[in-house]
Length: 170
Ligand SMILES: Cc1cc2nc3c(=O)[nH]c(=O)nc-3n(C[C@H](O)[C@H](O)[C@H](O)COP(=O)(O)O)c2cc1C
Image (tube, rainbow, N blue to C red):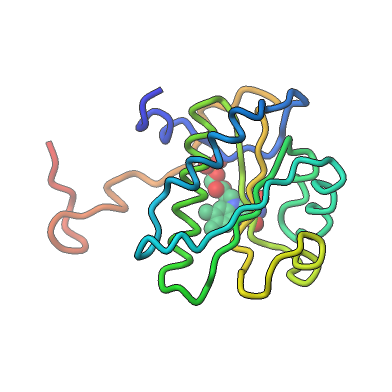
C-alpha cells in the first residue's frame, strides 16, 4: 500500500481478533513514533507499551471512553510534556504516525482520550511532569473493515486563496 492508500483506507478499529501482533511489528509501530518530528525536536513524548492482559483490563477500567481497550492485543499510552508549546500537536502527529504505520501492516487501532487521571498515574507509574495525551489500542481487526468511511466532501473543507472561495484544481 502506498501512503495515500493507507490513509484513504484506514479506519479506527476497536474490535480485535485474538491473533497476536508479532513483536517485530510492535517495534516498528514504536519506531514510527520515535521517528516522528516534534516541536523544536524536543522529543518530549514518552510511550508505555501495555500488552499484559491484566494491565489491558486495568486500562479499560481506568478509561471513561475506551473500555474496548480490554480486548486490544496491545496498547500504547502516549505521554507528553504539556509545558512544551505545541505538545498537543506533537501528540496528534505521533499517534497518527503509529496508526498509519500499523494499518500499512494490516494492524488496526483506535485512540481514546477519556480516562481517570489519578488512576492512570498510579497504575502506570506516570511521572508528574508528563501528561497522558491519549491511549492507542492495537490489534488485527476482528473482521474486514472496508467502505464505511464517513467524511465531508473536499469542496466543503478546502478553499482557494481565501476562505470560502471554491477549490480551484483541475
Ligand atoms: C482527538 C480524538 C479523540 C478521540 N477520542 C476517542 C475516544 O475517547 N474514544 C473512542 O472510542 N474513540 C475516540 N476517537 C476516535 C474517533 O471517534 C474516530 O477517529 C472517528 O470516529 C473516525 O473514525 P474512522 O476513521 O473509523 O471513520 C478519537 C479520535 C480523535 C482524533
